[in-house]
Image (cartoon, rainbow, N blue to C red):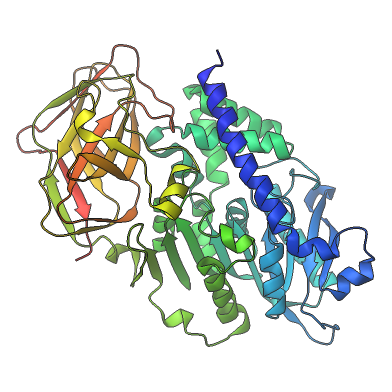
Length: 530
């Protein structure tokens, strides 16, 4: 029998690779007319040039250069630099780069170091990657009709992270569009001290398949997944060095206009860390959150199809690089799209999203045995939230059939009117454990009349070093979402101890007890839009 972790890794990586290869094949179609085998002059006439770009440390980055049609060097154009996503080749942005060039931009996209034919090793958005972006800008200013006063960066996922980091290190960058990226790498994959197993295995597997991971990356991933807490300090320092939030003061001082886009169900980089980062930005800023999983909200745009994320990204660049008065700076800067009704909502800031809250009491004492999956789960990385995005099929469970010895369950009464949940649901409870270490995963479900629960949100929580038998308070924010609970439905809170998305830390024979001591009731605080 295959080891369950290896089987999970193989299935997750296999699914992602299939999507990756399909996307690369489809996304490369617009570039086929300028593919190798045709004269370089013909490629230049079509407005695209394949280029070997000197990166930092003497490596070569494989890139594409797109220029406005008819550009003859008599004028300068704003420059946009696009680092590729994790594991993606340089053809990733062909469709959008061509659109931007047609709109009057010089666009340089390049395969990030360590992947495919670019040189070096995968440094996971480390200092070498930031130095690469600066080297690409230097090269573009020397070799293309790019304007040194009007430079922007954009990217999906890994490219988004590199773009944000670069904005904190390079004052030349005036605008950034960061899609499905991260601001805090530690909170993204190690929030509440719980390893996001499927996310880490997916990134590691794709890195091995499409590139050359550095020895440091291999060591960090091994320690991360093995739960070697003696290496935790090193892992935290490694992640902080690669987190734009670490360089927030520099980003603010440099003053780049920052647009952030993410999906509610991003299983690699949950939206909460982007929202926190957004609130601390002091320059021009915009935050857009939509249904979907990692990179699925902007994925159709990579195929050249109409896409709101890329459309607004170009509007952002038009305003902040060209000075076009297109009104984007006068719109309310926080835009949300509900997972259920499909419409957009606008807010003046993130704090306004969950300003109105309703409290659901979680009465009674409930005790569960750990180490057994109750059936309540957050889904499968990249798959479940994509199904929710396109087919409105989130992870589901029959709440009445959940085994109460392995799942603590609380339910509200049926609501007389729809409850429009917006933002981060907060769980407060008092926990007592028979072991000093443990993991609990909290879920919020929309429960229909027949007891079928649709997942609204969830979050894991891991504790260490607690005195067995001694109660302690827990405050846990579930991942932010926008979800409408229909009238007549209930909300259910479920807490169990096992979820395939995460590494669990429950010793054999553990028991978790959730209670409401006098003066400190267990509650669920639900943000709602009235």
